[in-house]
Amino acid sequence: MSLHNFQKNFSALLFQPRDTFKQPPANITKHFSDNGIEIHEGLEAYHANVLGSLTNAILQSFPLIASITGKDFLRAMAKSFIIKNPPSTACLNTYGDTFDAFIAQYPPARSLPYLPDIARLEIACNAAFYAHDDQPFTAQDMAKVAPDQLEILHLTLRQNVRTITSEYKLWDIRKLCLGITNDEILNFNAPEAEHLLVSRPHLEVHVRPISLADVTFLSAIQDEETLGQAAAKTLGAHPNYDLQQALARFINADLFTINY
Amino acid sequence: MRSLTRNAKENHPPAHLPVGIGMRAAHYDDIINAETSNLFGWIEVHPENYFGGGLHKDALKRACEKYPLSLHATGLSLGSDQPVSQNHLDQIKALIDAFNPFHISDHVSWSASGNAHLNDLLPLPYTYETLDRLCRNIDQTQNAFQRPILVENPSSYLSFKDNDMSEPEFLNALAAKTGCGLLLDINNIYVQANNHNFDARQYLDTITAHHVKEMHLAGHIERETQSRPLLIDTHSRPVCDPVWELYRAAIKRFGITPTLIEWDQDLPPFTTLLNEVARANAIIQDIEAQNVPA
Image (tube, rainbow over all chains, first blue to last red; front, top):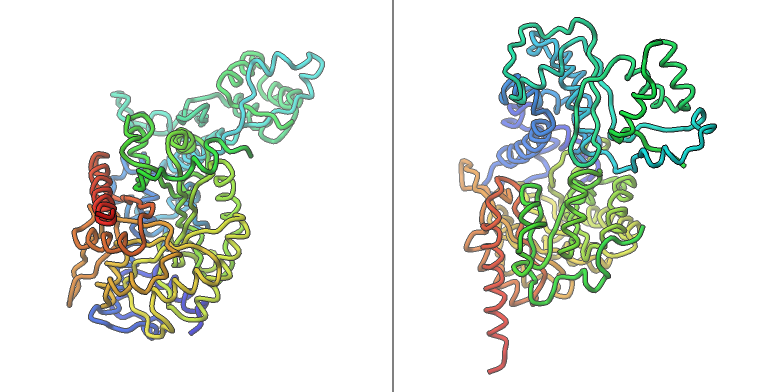
């Protein structure tokens, strides 16, 4: 037998719908003997293991979506996703990082147009949770920078920092899902785009609202611009932005690191 | 990178505590903060759960200050007909350098085909072709880690037609050809004996004793089929009585060996795991007592 072809056919079969296993194809059955347990029953055991463990991985990463749609809906949506998007690495920490795009194309979720953006928020939270531990650039570090070097200071965002922009009230929806508000929110559409910052200063992931000007500034830092360039770009778009205050706020929140 | 914890000698399970516990997130507090270090000798984790930073890595650092560590990989896919992922090897090597585990292991199975990873331990035919491929992948892994690994016997739910050898013969050949050690999962032997109709004691007798470096104990479930129950290795239940008896036979044959209580799904209270540890210790002490000359 060719191990290569067997593994190719076997893995393709495991991502087929469950009904396929009643009459498994000959390129699979020819390898196995029926020693009292029928071949399709063994195949179904593997199918259940593979789909079950990957579905659990998705369920763990998208608790907000589970609370909006219910677990059964999420489970069905996850199975459709898994069949079309098997993991591409053995480490499942960030498996599902394209789930937002899948949900946007998933017909049963069409009546919940904000769901892909909630998925984007959860993907960002998950990435922040598992990000590598890089060293924050602190207020003490900042105090050591000579004044004439501030302009050309090259900070970057830590690996646990993400920003999310949405036309929906993600902040309120998240609070509702987590049960930390009793406010009645009837309209999920935001009056203007809403911006959220996701970060993990130490072990816990934080989510909080920020302004468009904050996003402009953080994106400029992310794009590896110097502090001077990022400031100029932000003040060009938002002349009243309090840059000193924002910089202190972000440094205190441990958002930056520096590559020496 | 400097090792965060102990020196190599301290990193081994203490002689009087050969039984360890698989550390899962729900039990971090029990392992890191509770006064349980006189009850079990070491911990095991799946390195794949610690590739990132944050809460899990922090817990691992703290646990390794108290316990010797065994890294039990599930994602190397040693039996795939393709080389092992260099990225995966690099990430495990970083954990080895940081935490200095006393054992590193993975399974005699495959989980990747091309770019698709199935996150399961899939079955292999015991042919010369498979032996050759596994040996190449074990060599690649041992070269990357600069030390021998252990490979674990699997549970499987399908019987191949064209095996060239039995499972224990296949394991012996892997160890002899690559210098790797064997991790005998006693529950898996029991599951295999049931699912594939062979004698579990004979399996133990066939294994070359000096290759055996670690043992695992876990629970399984029975899945009803049209003919007879198919046993599925779920790590979701207590170790069953026949597996304890098989463990007794294994310790008699192979001597005292670091043994892991594995529980991965439907996690029980930590005290349940401690009870399983106590049961394994009782068997070991029983056999030790029998071996003391009168």
